[in-house]
Length: 323
Length: 254
Ligand SMILES: Cc1cc2nc3c(=O)[nH]c(=O)nc-3n(C[C@H](O)[C@H](O)[C@H](O)COP(=O)(O)OP(=O)(O)OC[C@H]3O[C@@H](n4cnc5c(N)ncnc54)[C@H](O)[C@@H]3O)c2cc1C
Ligand SMILES: Nc1ncnc2c1ncn2[C@@H]1O[C@H](COP(=O)(O)O)[C@@H](O)[C@H]1O
Image (cartoon, rainbow over all chains, first blue to last red; front, side, top):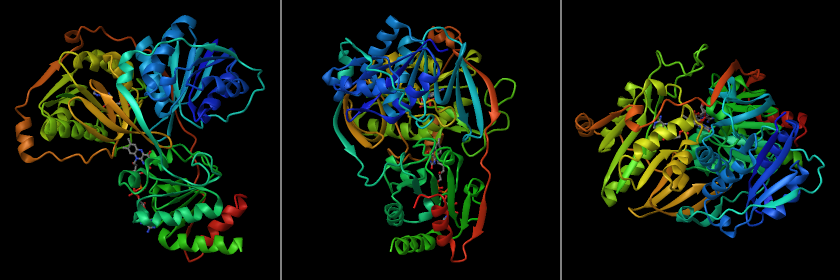
């Protein structure tokens, strides 16, 4: 039993992000009371969805300035104040960029430890967070020793989100004036890297490229395959750092976690910082010209060969199949 | 401007890490330690700012005595001075303790900007930069992939899940930078020679007026993860693409 669990609800484009719903689903399974805390001018509109996934109360901060400030600072201040009033036992935060900003500042403000990179959480007397280290070759359980609220940062896709049929949540408005210092950092523009087709985290097929693609323009081959199978294109960090493709495409420890039905790695060596982001895929296909590449250790189907030769053939085969 | 860059020494990222089974801390014997490659971007960012707008870079590190090597490397790249916080009581310190120690050391001198990497290569909690912002009472401008700035303000492209946000901030602030924000320089021979005579302040917990930290978390178990097994590996004989199509069909994704 977890007593009271809070989930930090991140609202993007008026809706809670996927990891928020995943965490609410998990929080329900811990037993006890599940509540959400949201900061967005449109937080109230998102409350119904948060209720559907298990929040019985939604604390909503709706200051219009949340839309134009770096949210981490003011949200952590308000959460710290709220946590002091209500003493939740556990605060779950999705390990997104904003989630990490909130968790770090909150932990410092309430002088509570934060356990990061969580993949699971258990509450039976103690609260224990499971995480993975060394490229997910080792699983670590860490127990909170502190009294007071415990803050855990949980990676996206750790749990499946399932609605729980709860009724409309109680809505409590948060009244927390934004400290002047947070107004020193303003968001002046927001840019999305344009991508068509399904999102990387949601696609049933992900085809990723690494340095083995030799040239940025060869990513076009991956996009063609993705279009034909209604999939999404990912990348290794090596090619993101080299500026071939935007960071939003990076899969791995410092990028996204993907769990598609089929993951196709093209010219990717399989460094553990990459595989940690894709080894949860249902099936893995790898194309690499080096038979000893570590990626083959996880591949259900491994093709030892030149990806620049195989990809055009794959495009032709898929086109022929479509007729 | 006064720029402080927080740097960490980590086990060589190219070696496979091991935990000590009894203490659950990182095994350090026989493992090379290096300046965290992620921190080179922070050092470079600091150096570029002071080279254009005046001032100096101070590097701060909490580490065992050996951490001096990482500081010397930063000094060789061009930082003006270093601060090393070493104390046996800090072995195995968690992120919040680390942030408290770094914040106390940073506060001993005036600063306009504190730079960190977004996460360390060994611990990668990725929370120290935000904690520092809270403890120093300034905004944390995080996950910068592009940076312009001077002594008063910064314009940063901050990574988001779908692209990036442009953030305009006035100083003082904490800034965390990602790999790719710049191209870190190599220390020159002259830099390496000069680094030997640059000042490094060595501090213990008591010098910062801090008490021995209480651990807030304990590792209760470490176990090998379930590993995937390799499936069928075939040499491409011209049929590779067909095999993949067959596989996709069998999985019913096409
Ligand atoms: C702290 C930290 C975090 C990191 N986070 C991530 C992360 O989130 N994601 C990530 O991906 N990496 C990450 N890395 C980097 C990681 O360690 C590897 O360096 C990176 O994944 C390698 O990318 P790559 O496989 O594309 O390149 P390489 O390792 O250079 O591999 C290229 C592969 O292509 C093959 N190849 C070459 N030509 C062809 C061809 N014509 N046909 C077929 N195969 C070919 C080669 O045999 C080789 O196996 C991180 C590293 C650190 C230290
Ligand atoms: N012991 C340390 N000494 C100096 N800087 C540190 C230390 N630990 C973390 N940092 C800084 O904080 C960043 C994030 O670390 P972490 O939160 O541990 O992932 C690192 O990349 C460093 O820039």
